Length: 273
Image (tube, rainbow, N blue to C red):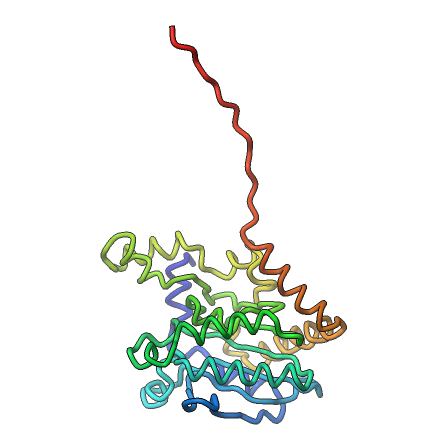
């Protein structure tokens, strides 16, 4: 499949949502609510659970499975209170020494006026800034669409895994097409998706993701068992580090993005005759 086909697959109805992974992978999940400032945003579900007898904090972007639940959850587009709830739970996890596991699946942050009035940009920026300094392991799994800063707010992690047909992008292909070609036609969106390099294989090649996870939704429990084993191994690896080492590993991981080489070119100057 090309980039555009993978984009459509990542958005396809029927893909398991964040809540499905939480229920399948974790034992005894207890959901916690509210940001202690404004309210509770159902686009992000979070709480505490066990994974293979290890206590963890989980955060999952949840789109909903039918029209009613999708409306309640803003189609998986978090508002500021969602990001603040996530940050509250991450700081709580740091306090009690629990690793954080995040599941990302969002077109992007909620674009409504009410979200802007409550400081959408600041909430995302604070989440990214604070997440970079967390002294506890953070692992993120991109399970569908990872759109822009709305996704990065839960993906400033020590390790990132991505499903084989998931996508991860700095901007939606539709938004990119509107900027570059002034028209978001299917042809332009397909070109933008290809130019943006949004696929799981691209993320693995660029070092943005550590591993690509094969999809097999017909055998979802088996797929989640394999993912669970990967998460447990990553948690054990990172938990062996000190708090300072965890922060430094995360910092160096992001500093390594975008490495390039410059080749010196000889310049020839010709004298005027």
